[in-house]
Length: 417
Image 1 (spheres, rainbow, N blue to C red):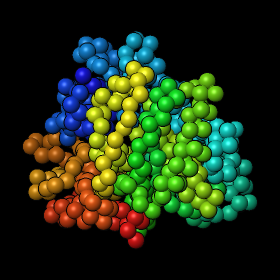
Image 2 (image 1 turned 90 degrees about the vertical axis):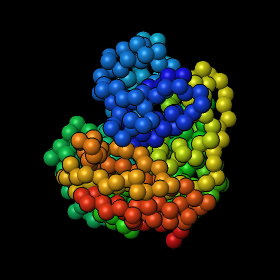
Image 3 (image 1 turned 30 degrees about the vertical axis):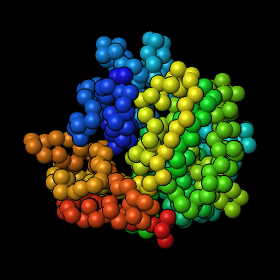
């Protein structure tokens, strides 16, 4: 088979690598990809949002199926566009992608179908939102309704922080149209985990769970980022909780989307928090999480290409997973998630051994790779358990000097505290 992966980040590199290691896949293309993916895919210089050029590429290169990584093309209807042209593509329709594209839509869906989540209100005007914050107090969570590249959520520990977030989104248009509506919800305390599933025609294929670290600095301090690292499995979450999450959240959500006339196909990402009252939804996404993908896919022992081909054909398939643990640490450019300093040269990565590297915000300049975004790459290691994998990955990271970059030194700490 020939496979086209759309996207350019670390998540897409992990997807590309999984396909390239599949015996059933002869050739992987990435559009547009990044310069670090060259060993695993042939790059096609086509923007993720240029649907016509992407579809033409798929036709001209006899692509068996296309796999979409990022949320924006999905929200803009790339799956509908490809399917109308008779092209096979894995992902949700534009209507189904609203489960991520509008937090208000997702919350209303959960309310209607009694899927456990935090209590909330939706606002388009500043003063009523501020009044709501003053009535309920902090901690409280403020979310931009639309897509904000993983940065549209503020977990406010004070009322003033929450008010500032509302002002920035509704008045300051920090996230443009994505923040023209905000969802304010109760703060939930508990252990978080990411539960991702492949979904096709009502069939759900759950993945092994993972946990990411959203805050920029050690000890889960600092601003919210798109994720500074992740690990899988999550030993502090029992199999019973995972099973309960499937029955109370994942399965009802898939059925709810079908009842609403927008059946969901693709990757359903469920961000879950284990509260005193059981698992509750933090958020739904319509695609793989980043950086969770980079620690979950390496645990898959099934042929990834064969699996996606089978589910697109409506055939059943049994996925298999490795018991080994994977810990992945994001290396980010100085300044992330604020104003990022681009152009720093990466150290000689060949000095690290026994680790996986997935590239994100990088480009080739002369003979070197340089930082070209916020999250630059992720370094991962396998181990018998989280502690073993964590030890391996940090031993290798410490071999290099990361001038112009930074990373957390405690990814996985919640599993081994």
